[in-house]
Amino acid sequence: MMTLSERLKLKYAPASIRRTDVKPDGAMEFAPGKWGCVVAMMGAVVKKGKTAVFSDETCSCAGGRIGLGFTDTYAPGFQEFLSCGDENGKCAWHREPEGYKKSPAAVDAWLQGVPTRKIAEKYVVFEPLANVPAGAQPELVVLYVTPDQLSALVVLANYDRPNADGVVIPQGAGCQTLCLFPWREAEQEHPRAVVGMTDISCRHLIDANMLSFTMLYAMYQQMEENAAGSFLDRETWKRDVEKRL
Image 1 (cartoon, rainbow, N blue to C red):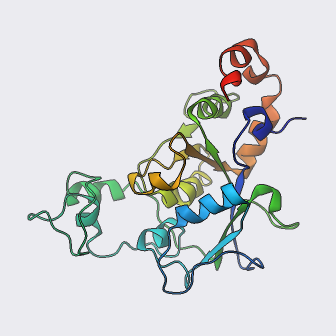
Image 2: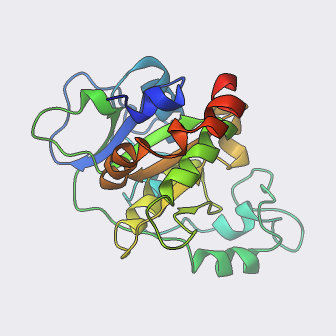
Image 3: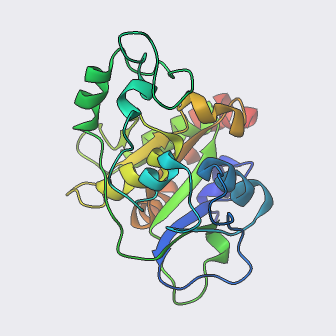
């Protein structure tokens, strides 16, 4: 039986995200105290088949620490940095404010709907799904997809649901859309997939025509099972879309 990756002709193989107390051998890891981008690490996983590991000691990016659940507290000055600065257009981080929200107050309101957590496990591991070791369980599956492939995944995510909200596109940092938002979906009665990498700050780290599509491993398995006999086997997809992949 064809895998979902084969059916959609994905350029990059699926990646896994999991939490664990066992550090994988030979994994890429940032040096303690050295800044590095979580999204760049995911790029090395999907494009080069690498394994990456993060811990509280080796994830120094303030946003990455939030995104991977090593802290649930935003650094002072975050509201000014994410928005348009203070009344003088400045922020305490000695950097230009990002302008992703209209005001610090808008950031405060947005944060009410953004999940945070302090994970119990010591490590977060990114690795190719095919390389997850025996006995370990993937939590999340990440696909890097084009608009045509994303369209198929949105339809397939809703294929066996009575409604049309099986996929969500939240505003957040790239690492938040990889981990925090999908982890929150795991707590819902009907978990949804999360489209990510709309973060302007990390767009340069992913192919220009791609976004991420992250879902619980169980949802990925269900979508693979549902693919046979679905629209992916029908003429409209094959005639009008599949040939462009």
